[in-house]
Length: 110
Image (cartoon, rainbow, N blue to C red; front, side, top):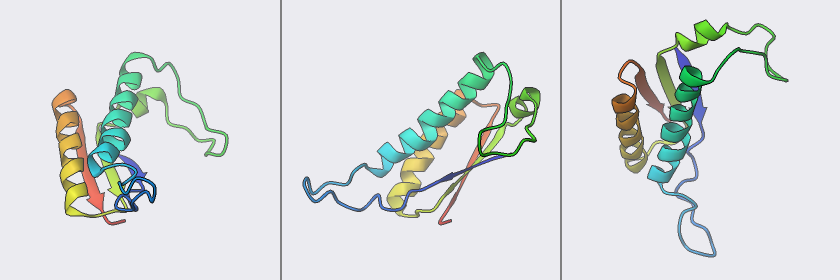
């Protein structure tokens, strides 16, 4: 299982110059969940050749085969509004259609 923590607080803060939010809940969900997850899965399936530690990460890294074996994604969002829930569900449904062999879930509010 792979967990992704996303910061969704502040989506309702308006830009003082335009009077509009910096991004809508749907724009947030499409970018942070749909697009990034789609890219991650496609890269794992198509072009990944090895795994390695990151500069500030642990030196114990799962093998590429172990990473490719992860088919359950859980997104933890610190925001929780009806609009955000709807937007995230739309993005998750698209991921479910594109990657039916994967499971996608979300936890709101922390």
